[in-house]
Length: 243
Image (cartoon, rainbow, N blue to C red):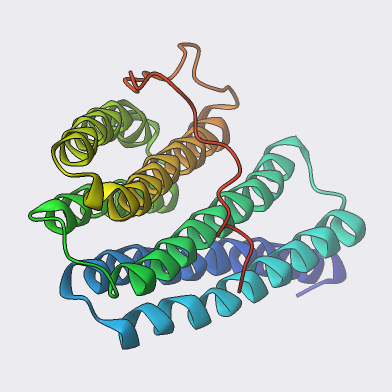
């Protein structure tokens, strides 16, 4: 092997390495989504604590990806198509890190809700919504591995279903609060949880858009479908940044 062949081979390994890291990070995030919802439904404080602590590994992986992608850009001067791959990995790691943060926040609220009277049926509905987002993420990661923009577009379209599930839960929580004021605190926590899951879906959608960009060189032309019809936006989750 001559020097130029050696450089190309090393460069390819670098690209494969950062892409393998994003898939590994995605697997950690998939588990966090499922576990935080399971902890809520099963009232499992130990599992909720595991999700909270596990977020550090997700954050560390994002830092590693950022360092390695910066190295590739600085040392390899990638061509346009390869630069798309590298930049997409950086953006995808950020989306995955945010989803991990939402899972951690849900786990925190699950711990608080353990001290309250359960709202009948709500935890199971939240878990089904989380499961849908986890399946979207799985398909988005598969579409990235396969460079399948059609599958990525399917993932984007499915975000509307998550929005509809959120709308239904929002109305359900309002009903519970109006029926009995003692439900207000628990329902507010559950609403924040449902909103966090809806936000997870938005980040999965952004990840799928990166897949289309990497595969085709263009972002989706149509605006992503949204079906969140709730009358107000939630800002400033007071538990969002507390360890």
